[in-house]
Length: 619
Image (cartoon, rainbow, N blue to C red; front, side, top):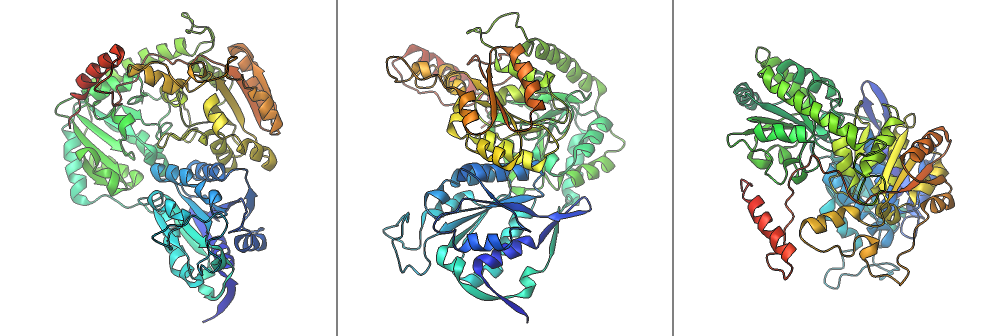
């Protein structure tokens, strides 16, 4: 057996360069690169290895470990989980900074390889700088925080362990069912230790998207249920996009008269102006989709885990005889909500259903009902996103909906909109019109403030030919903005629109909706010095990070600035003051527990309403 003597870190990096993915017949490297912030614990071992292989596996420096991991995750999402990146950090805070990003990837079923440095396996110099000591178990380090937020976790305490662990890590990252973050904790002494690795460990390996078909018995049962439907409804989730099944979804809906609603992750699976499209569904849904969901007798959920925002905390499906079908490649998700499961790749499952249901159609009157509801919603869209509102906002400042209207009017169908947390995802889900698949990039599984700018960078790296527009609130911008500087440094231009509503407007609304007084969310309701919280110059801050930037007032100025941003050659930030409230139409109830006991009458009233709403839940 031929062997190569390499350090563990060298062997790891070399093996990563040997991984390829077959994307629609074209071979590409599975790993596009490695984000690295060096420190003690990875600079000597991983740093030396990455330097050796920098021509085949680019190393990119970021400014924040959480931010770089967000960028890597967004890159994978923009590639429908078929290409990905790795991230390496030092031990201690460098590693724990990535835990939030690992949780985000875990919730959203997105692949990222995390390579945090770890304490010495030999323990000779313990306790080392930044070491978190467990008083009862010396094998535990800060990196054990990654265990519950990783699909696969291993600590490589001997260099030869990489031979068996890395293939499992790669399999997890490329598995459509078990896809998610992988953490390989790398003790700094083991990174530098050498071993005679078999040459076969570095042989070229080609991965591809596996498409498991449905079980024949399940398929027959599901088709029988569908054929009983008079008012069927499809809920398209992110799995439709990851399976590249948008054409199959379109063919299926057209063939059998299915209205199609969409989740946050599934938005764009069907174009907004398609005759079968009925809009977003759930808590942040359109009135059109939600009305149909209340009447539907068969709901076919495709590639979605049906989280509480989608089902309005299990109250949305109002037909007492409704039957739920889950078409999902993941068994864990396919059985949720007591659903009738169809465990299969979405694309393959739709093809099987298309063939089996060939002589059946749902009543056309049901689809026409959806089309009328969408027409009403479209009229509302026109009024909510207009440059001027017939009824001004409470503050007289532009609404989020008006900002989104401006971004849309000045944009192109190929633009990719990026957002994550706060009130904007609700407005985007309801009001953003998506013409193309993967033009809508929302992180709303973990709803992580701070994902937006870093995520925009990752999307631009994946789709450099498309304009990437990040919309972000002032709160999220202040939480994590450092990768704006990274975008300038790397030459990946993004457009960032900062909506300054002076605080956490989304949670302020939720706070008051549950009967609470405005408190500690909008800056005007926070503890502050006599002159109040400072007015942040977001444009000035962005310029300090190397971006082009300007502050504007009103929608017309915003539209003009957006055109300047599109013409610019590097990242461009536009800041404007906005109203902290949101559109009233659409949406549905969300289960947020209200205190049973309170001296405040508004809380008591809110609790009575909460108890009444809870009665709509089936269990």
